[in-house]
Image (cartoon, rainbow, N blue to C red; front, top):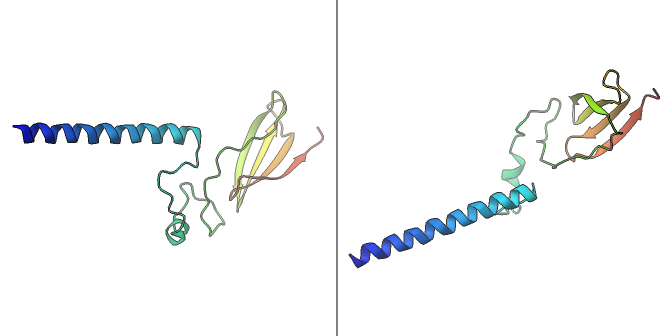
Length: 121
């Protein structure tokens, strides 16, 4: 009977520990999109073979996650369209919601803004 109680106590502690680790991991992931419990960076061959979750036409290299991109849009501006083109994303923005005022070119591999084109309207 004492052995059974001991097993139950050990299993309870194991479950509590694992639940704590899961909650901690979820919290860390919500604060930092690049957070990983286990860093497998020394094994490059497996990470390079992973295909992107959303296929990108014209690329042979998988696209990695790059987090959030902050576009400095003017007040009241909105995104009219976003179209992938090879390794780039073309984003058209509008200040009045009807016509494109700016064209943004983003690099899908890094998430950096490559150029911003103003139409002058």
